Image 1 (cartoon, rainbow, N blue to C red):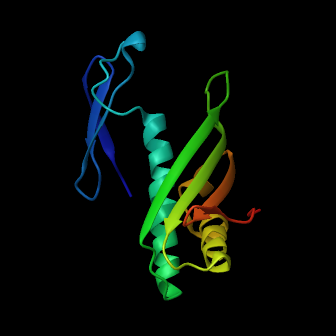
Image 2 (cartoon, one colour):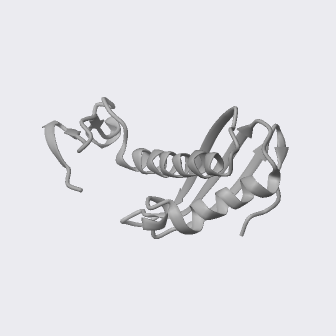
Length: 141
């Protein structure tokens, strides 16, 4: 995979992904940007959410389960000093549907430990939690 971005002025950059989608990035005004695009760190958390969400839907479908909905909330804690990397990332899955707790937990564990290339590329501790139809699931290590 190869990608590139181009400087479009001040702290703004634009690029096209290998799949043909345009991405705009910019910094906050207080550091010289104009807030015309997402911050790279925001995109990283979104990438974690998207990667694991694709895994979860795929795994559940292979188990012959069909979620009615799936929402993934991510949060990240960053170091105070440069490079201010993410030290902790938490992923919370919110599912709706006729989904057995043990199957959802298995899908999440498989994504976390084996399949999600984005979260497994981070130098951060990744924790997860989930709820099905508004009921919190069991802890996943």
